[in-house]
Structure formats: structure tokens, C-alpha cells
Image (tube, rainbow over all chains, first blue to last red; front, side):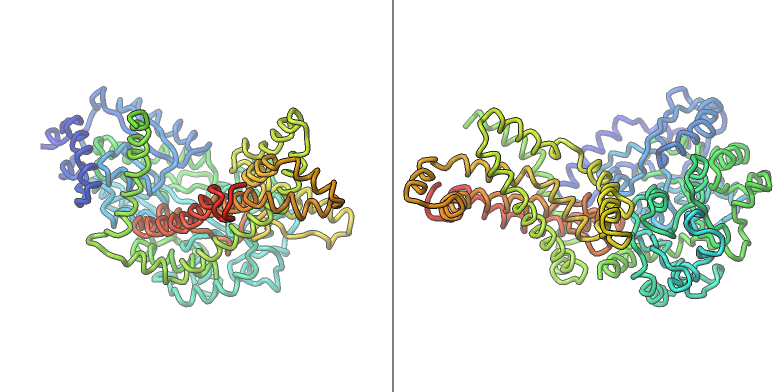
Amino acid sequence: MAKKILKTPTKPTRLTGKSTRRRFLAGTAAAGAGLAVSGPLILIPGKAKASEKIVWVGWGGSTQAVQQEIFIKPFTKETGIEVISASGPNRAKIKAMVDTGNVEWDLVNMMGATATGLAKEGLLETIDSDLLAKWRGQSLQPDWIKDWAVGWYYWSGGIGYDPKRHPMGKHPRSWPDFWNADKFPGRRGLRPRVNENLELALMADGVKPKDLYPLDVERAFKSLDRIKPHVAKWIKATSQTITLIQNNEVDFDLTYSARVESAKASGISIELVYDSLLCESGLMGIPKGSKNKSAAMKLIDFFMREKPQKAWCENRIGYGPQNTKALAALSPALKAKLPSADDPSTAWVNIDWWGDHYGALSERFKEWLIT
Amino acid sequence: MIFVAPFFLFMGAVFLLPLAFIFYTSVVADAFTLDYYIKAFTGALYLRVAWTTFEISVVSALTTLVLSYPVAYHLSRQPPKRRVLWALFVLLPFYTSILVKSFAFTVILGHNGIVNDILRFMFGPEAGIKMLFNRTGVVIGLTHYLIPFMVFPILASLLAQDPVLHRAAEVMGAKPWRIFWRVTFPLSLPGVIAGTLLCVILSFGMFITPALLGGRKDMMMANLVDFHIKETLNWNMASAVAIVLLLLSSVFILLLAQVRGGQLFGERH
């Protein structure tokens, strides 16, 4: 059964894709070409056919180069499945691909708060339940193992500052501190998106990390009103969360441990407050209509393994493993920079909550931002 | 006619068809709806962003005009060979990627940027001006981008003037300043208006500059389209905003066509 589905020839699919596009343009509701092959898939053990090939999409940069070495190369060696790396996992592109029946990506990295929207729109494939069950038991955040995507690592956001300009005692150490401009004068930097900000605003207002969800939206916006006049820049590009501190454009901002650690390694004077972090999930999902679903799931399985997860977190300091065994195997020095699941000062993003609210709140936040 | 057919086919396929599709997306979600347009014309977010877009575009175009007119005037007084050389310098910003320029501006205009360092050196530590991540930053960035689009239309209408008119005014005893305001400037108005309209139209569609150099209030309509395409995945709303933006620009394009035809002044210059 599984084999039969897998063998669904690519050529007719492509033809369907074209006619779908035409029908779509003509105004008929689009039925993605991939729907034809959306039956349940079962992983086939053993080596794949030599012709198997998938396109995997990462966030780019040096991080993806490291992932290439630690995950992709050994995976190809073990399974014989060729992996083509692409970068820039743009959700709009996924939507365009699925809508036009022209799905070129097989496995895509996504961010927790925004990925749920893709699933809700029916743009992601359902992942094999055996695979999910296998990893759920060994996961730091089992809630991040979804049937539409698998959270395989996390990153941590916190307060960044320049220790030369703001030595010990002169910088905020928590989100209430960050919100307190009288006690800690300075220009703030936050991100121009609703997720993260609502969590930070509530923590600043005294909500404990474990009590965050469901988010009290009204209270969060009221709290945001208080910080608004002190935010010098709503930082769009993640890389700017480092450079703006470096160039003395902001004093304190929301930045990320992996970015800070690599900036420090290259000699930039920057520090992160490690005891009030907001951890967000990095997931991987399969766009609806991918022609290489089963191979993509094998790659997900590989990404979840202890050995490569440990190697990756050792190489890129600041990223945390989803695999609990990998976390346990890390050195104490490294673990100090990675929050554990029960750390009371750390907030973990609830991706289900965001799935229900991201669209509407995003627009409300934009409106709030320009007024 | 047959020879222009390929052009129309090409434009039809790569421009009109996608445009029709965008229009379609803006009025059809599951069924026909005008909700997105109603939102685009009544929602606080949309009205405010439309006004910001208009404001930034007009201010940038006027700043560009003030800076460009003397440049165009100077160019028009040069011998042709030297004019070509100077014109190349005017075109320099045109050849640089707008993304690169925007990043360069953060270095120049920033708190510790070259301009503020000089200001503080000259006038003391309190003399710095905030020129980044606010409206000023956006206007500087846009003006820099727009200058070539203003200089050349003005230059064209300055060069088209009959030099005999100048001499006639001189013979009649007019001083240079008077000649400029009574002869040269009025005759260059079609170029001035065409350049200004062109700059307004070009500014309407900008989104990198406000995103990188602007503050939280400097959101333009193109940023709103980008937001709905990439963040909320609400392509219906994005399409409606895009169509509204197109209509706004069309008004100015029609005006521009009027100036180009010389009809705004009832005669051809």
C-alpha cells in the first residue's frame, strides 16, 4: 500500500499542477495537486532508492552551514537520500507553492508562533503518527511535537546589553527591570511583531512565566503602552538586534542567546541576561503536496536523534536540543546557558495558543505600533 | 501594428494577467466580497498608513525638488561635454542598490554616525540630532533615491528654453535674478511639476527605506502589503491594499500625462 502511494509518478502530478494553476486563475477553488497523494504514509525502513531526493529549507547563514555538516551529510550517507539545501523559509512562498500545485520544498524550518497558521490553512502534510509517538516521549517540550510539524530545537530570547556601557548593576536583569525606564534609563529595542512582545509585556507586568497562557491580551497591550515611549527601534532584522547594541543605537534589546554567543566569539562587546529567557520552538514541517513525503519524514527522524542534536548544540552555543538525552549529555558549562523545562524564570512559547490568535493579534499590534 | 503584438502579448502575460489575478484575489475569498475594500477604506490602520504614505511621498518629493533645482540649473549652464560628466555623478545613487544605501545611511546618520560626530565635535556633546529610525531618516533616504528622477525632467525643460528669450530680457535691462524668476523658472515649470509628480509616484511604492530607516510610525502602504503577504498570510487583504495603492498612483500618473502633453498650461513649451 505504502509503496504504491510512494510510487505515484511525478509526471502526472506536475501536469495536474499546471491545470490546477489554470483553474485557480480562472477562479475555481484550488485543489492542490498534492491532495491526490495525501493518504497516510508509512516509513519504509532501509536504504532508499538511489533516485530519492528532497529539498530542505533552513534559515541560511553559518547556522545552516553547520547543520549541513552535522545533520545533512551523515543522513545522506546513511540513507542514500540526496538532500538539496535551500534557505529562506518564507511562509508566503509555501502558500504560493501549495496554492499553485507547484511544491518544490519537501521539508521546511519554521518558527513556532507563526507555523500554526500554515497548518490551519491546510498548507502542511500530516506526519506519520508512529514517528511522532516515538519522539514525543523523549522530548523536552512534548507540546511542540505536532502532527503537522516537529519542534526539533529551541532558541532563547533575552535582554541584550553592552557590558562596557552598562556594567554590573547598571542594566536590567528581568523584564520588569526592562520596563522600568526610571531605574534603568536607556533606549530600548524590541521586535515589530506581536508574538514575543505580549509574553514580555505580561512578564514585565508581574505574570509568572508558567502562568502566561492563555495570554491576557488586554493586560499585555496596557503594559506595552508603558514601554512604547522608551523603544528607540522596533528591530525588523534579527541581525540588527546585535549591531544596534554594538553601534550604540540602543542600550537594551530583545536578542537571542545564539546570536549573542557568536557575536561575543567574534570579539563584540555584548552580553545576555540568562535568567529571564523566552524560549521559542524551531519546527520542521512538510508542505502539502510534497512529492517526497516519506524521505522528508526520515530526515525529521534523523534531526531528532541524540547524537547529531548534541553535536549541533555544542557547535552553535545557544540553541537548545529538543531531545532530552542530548540535553543531558551536554557539558555543565553549556547547560548553564540552556534553560531546562522546569526553570521557573524561563517562559516557553505555547504554539497552540498562537495558532488561534496570531492573525488577528498581528493586525491589532501593527495598529497599536503606528498610533 | 503587427510588430508591437509581441510587446502586448508579453505585457499581457507578465503584467496584466497577474494584475487581474490580484484584483480577483481582492474581491473573492470564498465568494465575492467587498469586505477587504471596506476595511481598506475605513480601518484605522489602513487610513493612517495611507495618510503616512501620502505625507512621506509629498515631503520627500518637495525636499528633492529644493535640492535638485539648483543642480539641474547648474547642469544646464555647462558646456555639453562637461554636462555629461556631471550628469553621471547625479546618476550615481541610481546605480547603487537601495538596500546597500539604506544600510550605509545607518552608519552615516546614526547616533555615533559621521554627521552626529561632526556636530558634537563642533557644538558640544548635546548637539547630536536624531536622524535615524524616524521620519527624518525616511525622508533623507527617499530624497537621496529620488534626486536623479527630479534633476533630469527639470534639466530637459531648462535646455528646451530658447536662449534668445534670455538675451531679450537682458537687452530690456532685467537683472539676472529677475530674469530667473520671470523667464527661466516659469518656463521650467512643466519639468518641475513632472519631476515632482514622478517622485511622489515613486515614493508611493517604497518599502525598504521606511522599513530600515523609519520608526514605528513610518509604515507605508507597501509595508502593509508585505505584512499581509508574509505575516498574516491574508492575501485577499494584501491584494486590496495593493489595488488601492495602484489607484492612488494612477491619479498621479494621469496628472503626469497631462503635464507631459503640456495641457496643464494650455500650451506646449
